[in-house]
Image (cartoon, rainbow over all chains, first blue to last red; front, side, top):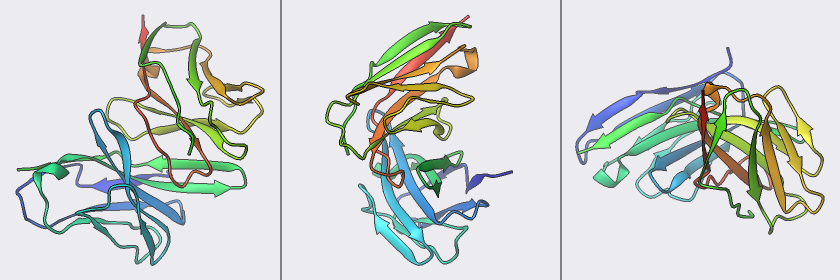
Length: 114
Length: 109
């Protein structure tokens, strides 16, 4: 089954404690992306990657890092989490075939930083 | 990317067609119209997209006006499981999508 998986699904942590949210896709997509969703602000892109070792900032990259060492994985790293990073996070991978484009989203990771 | 305007919310009766409007008056000639939906904090789900022609798939139909300044997503026979937030997005490509507030659709039995 084609899917995007994220782990953990829920996480409560404390300010300053480094954490990593993993994202993996089994569809061999080149393009992957991270979003955060906050009430009243919609989904905002954090980082994206157009291929292995190619990453770039989205709209809200401050406080986050990413890496793309292999095509299937795109982890999101919070080196020193702060309470304003409490949010719902989604990873997505994109299939592109001619004019057909579709983003496949993971189930989400709900992060609370105390 | 062009911005879109959607109603905040709408209700629909189960079994009836749901017509979701979207205005995108500043859309450029090569921007696509995409529709996604999000069911209660799950990951958004792709529904359909189009450039200028009307499109139909197993989930919905997309009607784009001739001047491309607006579009309508049609769910032909709404079910309770179609209750969700529906996002209309215009974009040059699917690499980056700007999700607005969307339309909260409630399907009632």
